[in-house]
Amino acid sequence: MMDSLYGARSGVDRAWTGEPPDPMARPDYYDGVVLRRSIGYLIDCVILFLLGLVLTVILSIFGIITLGLGFHLFPLLSIVPIAYSTLLIGGPDSSTFGMRLMDVQVRSWGGERPNMIQALVMTLLFYGTIAITWFFGLLVVFFNIRRRAAHDFLAGTVVVRRLPASAVTVREA
Image 1 (cartoon, rainbow, N blue to C red):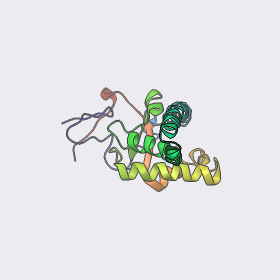
Image 2: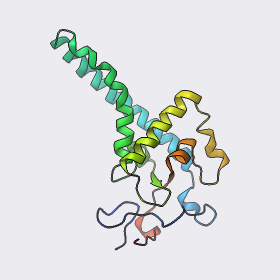
Image 3: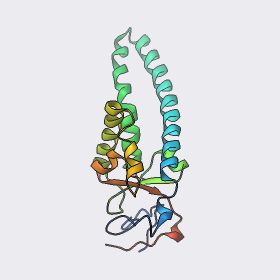
């Protein structure tokens, strides 16, 4: 059975077998990934801002109704970006909404979709590296051929272009 990057829901869903494609042999996987990924993240920031705004209003109303007890739930808003990225990257499309709009997706080193643990590790490392080093962990993309950021190396993932099904040759394992 042949599956594509768009992901048939049955069988093996691999973009490649073994190591990721060489960027020199298959540049279509990597063309513009850094820019697309950056714009995708900005789109995700807008989505997260709007989601946070809605949740803040809901928690505020809940806090008023519970005479202040509900206000203790506000620290839970800090897990929204982590849950958003983890659930979407570990989900069937292997990408956040911003990444989908920019036609990029996350794959594990072997070509399959990342599982939830791998998506969580990637997300925590991403937020950890940008919190500690600001953007220096992201500068790594300019010094490696597959344009992987520091958190991609540590999580064993690679971000590639989402290719049409006709451009992808996939073998079952």
